[in-house]
Image (cartoon, rainbow, N blue to C red; front, side, top):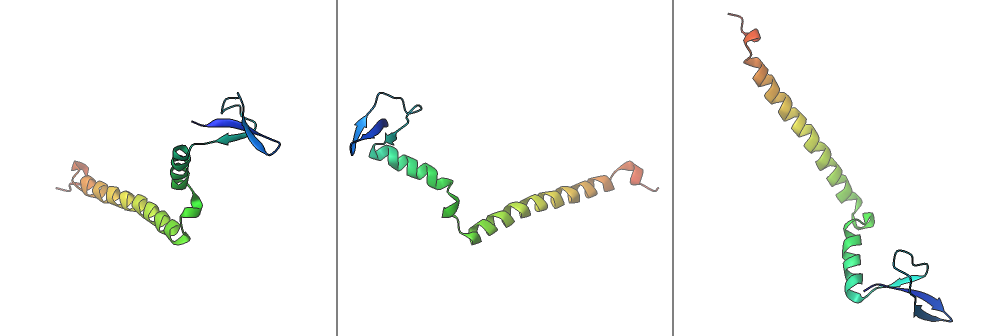
Length: 88
């Protein structure tokens, strides 16, 4: 469990403060620290190389363009069969 501690004369002393109100340091157990590292590394931008970032951007942008072009194509085919386009 995380504990709020203060540095006093070179020693860490636990305080009665809650973690939200802690003005000193927060001491974590090893399992909590491992969970923190795992959670923070998922969103750490320094973990992604510039090539990967470029590939992710291009993939996301291409997906939007591909969906738009597909919908436009289906719309064109559907509108082609409308009665007002029939010249008989």
